[in-house]
Image 1 (cartoon, rainbow, N blue to C red):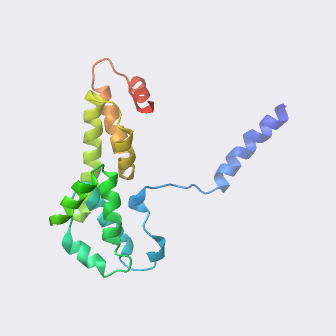
Image 2: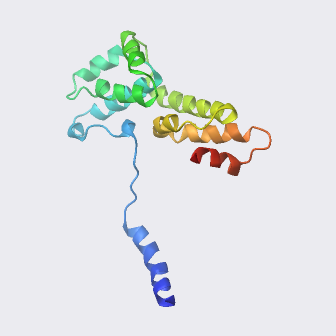
Length: 167
């Protein structure tokens, strides 16, 4: 019995070194692989997702990306809008406008909004699993914000707050 445990104790770390790590991302980092070889396609995908998540629509960027096969901006925009928790009619309304979007700053804006939403919920509301799932592409920011908000309430500890995220 002890020999088997020693063997397992040795083999598991070796296997962990040999098996490559797999990082699963959400739709933001999962563009259509049929277009991987096309210059600009991945950037259009990320820009579209980030804009949709922020509830913004950049017609100029969408037009630029429409010339790339697969129309990556519009293809991912809906995923972003839905992932942020907007209703279909809200997403339709966003597309009617034309926001002058600084795409380089959208990822940070979305991350910050997720954190702030989590912080407010941690102070006053239950953990929102749907919002957390939508925010996963932004560094677990909703979860971290929730814990920070929950811990800011007098008497709450990290352990107590973590139990609220499991329910």
